[in-house]
Amino acid sequence: MKQITKHVALVAAAGAMLGFAGPGGASEPAPGSLDWTRCTGSGLDPRQQCATLAVPMDYSDPDSPEIRIAVSRIPGEKPSARRGALLLIPGGPGGDSLGDPSGKGQKLPQKVRDAYDLIGFAPRGMAPSTSVDCKLDPADISMTKRLPWPAPDGSVDGNMATARRTAEACARNGGELIRHISTANEARDLDRLRAALGEKKISAWGVSYGTYVGAVYGQLFPHRTDRIVLDSNNNPDHTRVTRNWLAAFETGVEDNFPEFAKWASRPGNPHRVARTPAEVRSGFLRLAARLDRDPLPWPGANPPLLDGNALRQTMLSSLYDPDDYPVLAEAVRAARKDTVPPAPEAPPEPVLQNVAAVGVGTVCNDVEWPGSAAAYQKDVDESRAAYPLTAGMPRGPMVCAAWPYKPKEPAVRITDRGPSNILLVQNERDVATPLAGALKLRQALGDRAVMVTVNSTGHDAYLANGNACGDATVSRFLATGERPHRDRYCDQGPFSVR
Image (cartoon, rainbow, N blue to C red; front, side, top):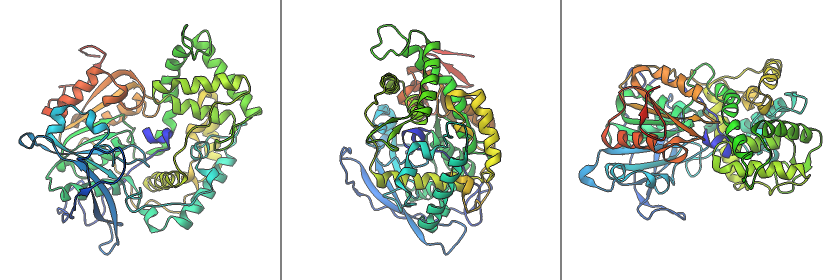
């Protein structure tokens, strides 16, 4: 999940209710109107246009008040080649793709940009759509609070206290909308957007959490899908959803830390921290344990201490992209000398508050979490013993352990029923969405999907941390509809069958 450590993100989904399209089909929603105007903001392609779409807050209530979804587009560049619209589904929950038509959308090959209108959006709850804010204590929006890093002795008592504070603040300040933020509702909003765009079918490129949104959309509205690319994929288990994704960090870190360790022990590397990969690992564990006992003041950071969990969080964030390895290496080198690196740059507090509220609403409304501290403590103890790098965090209690509301509907179960028009692309070493989870989604989709596994390291495969073979495969599918006939392994060179 890209946003999950670069800001935060975890997720889940839910199924059909009455009065709107679900797996069994239903009437076409009345198209909303889109009044396209010039976008405001800096750094945008002058061709990008913006609009807002009205959707129901509560799809189960015919009298539900409307909320607004902010939408952006760059029209296809060759009208004679136009195929339709390509939704750019962001990661998160807590991300948006409003700037993506001007940003990563322009990395798409010309044939794809010719054929598709590139469509971005801010999901429900995310500003400038109708937004939510829990008004959390600033200390509770830090990454070491939003992810359940346990105390140095492994206790989850502090995590449970944070969960209660956060849940109470969201119930008090989040308004009615926070109860209706979910993956299934985001998928329904996207189908309203499809209709408003005048498209009978829609194509999509979903990344990280966006792969789950895309899978849920394809389950609820299978015959309204055209060409679907799911990039950096999550385990779709509808009984656990985000709990599985959080737990996957155990595997993700173990898949990726060896790559950092090889880099950080390479002779001639100016950021070198040890002579061998084994020494990088053992040294990191010793340093984290030392900082658990004796944290260093860290002015400007939130919280203002470089403790063991702050170092572990730096590790987790840095493993998303090999280009960020120097951030972790320099944190290790500084802490060994009892100094600290520069405090990480954070977005403005209102942005963090909004991201946190959307993340909380999605994660907790998609699936119910246990409320017993004892159950989490047992899992955390086991995790700490088996996966020392992540110190038990992946099995800890998030805010949902104290969430006062039950999910309004069951999570959507992803199945093999639907058209065979999905291409999964997945890096072999991905800290946030590990290959093991992607294989679960591949299994659930059955003959609907083909998966290309890319011999690469980092989160986000297509046009980011993947390789030329994987990029060419996805580009060909979007431009022509041609998919590999079966699952493939993409080394740097031509396809090889595994």
